[in-house]
Structure formats: C-alpha cells, structure tokens
Length: 190
Image (cartoon, rainbow, N blue to C red):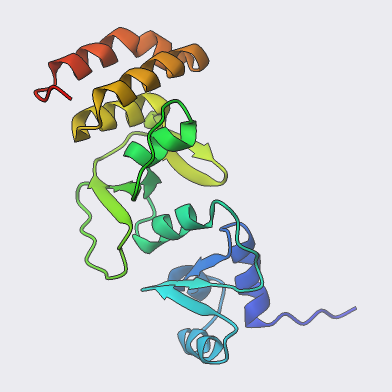
C-alpha cells in the first residue's frame, strides 16, 4: 500500500510530542516549505500562536500545553521551566505563580513579542541541573529552590519547599543546610 503524507501529517507527527506545537525551524527540517506554513494558517489548518510557533488544532489541549508554548516561544532550544513554575510543578510548596518562568542561556536575548504571561530568566545551566518532566526540560528541585531564594520568593514558601522537598528528594535532603543558609543570608526579611 502506498501511503501519501501531507505537510500537515508531518507537522502533526512533531506536534503530538509537543502538546500540539511545532516551530518554523522544525517544519523546515521536516521538509515543509515556509510558504506552506502561511497557506495552512490562512486555511485554518494551523494556528500561528507566536513568532515562529504554530499550533496544530488536531492535537487536543492538555494541562501542560501552556508550558510547552512558553518554552517554544523563547526560540531557544536550551529553554527550561524554572523558578516559581518549577517549584509549583514539583508540588513542594503552596506557591501559585502568576507567570510561567523559563530560563535561557545568559548569552541569549529574547526580543520577540507575545511574551505576556512569561518571566524570562538568564542563567547558564549544566546538564546535572536539569530534569525531564512530561517531555519538557525543567530545573532540578534544588536549583528551583535556589532560584526562588535569589529571586525573592517569600521565606515561608521556601521553607516549605526545603522541608517537603527534603522528604521526597535525596538531593534536596543533602543540600538542606546549604539552602537554609542561603535563604537566611538573603537581605529581605520576608
């Protein structure tokens, strides 16, 4: 049997693993010409959600869709969920972030529109500071706690994260004293 694949089929294959999203770069790598992306948008086969990011409507939304969109919006392949967002995902404190926090390399500058709802941080992360969660990169719990200490998250939320995290995460348990010392050394009394 001879199978015929459309450009949309190729995009859907990529998008299934990315909560419905595909980037221009990924489309081009899959052999989909740039002109076809514009045609698919005008025919409502694709939705343009940000500069260089498209959504394939055939892929259903999930509770994680917004996180993948934030990572792809940056245009940075090294983008990772971080700070308050990571702490919330790990479920070790009562933090309730109003923005999705992502971290990209220090050398990268994000100059694209559409970033409302995102907080972009710049930090060079090592592979051992990263973890995979639901098909997306996220900082480890220890790194998330340290980032939240440095960004001024209230102390009671950090205490919760350290205490709860040390019960469920060996790395946090080993760094518990260091993390508490970092928090106590912070200038603000909150």
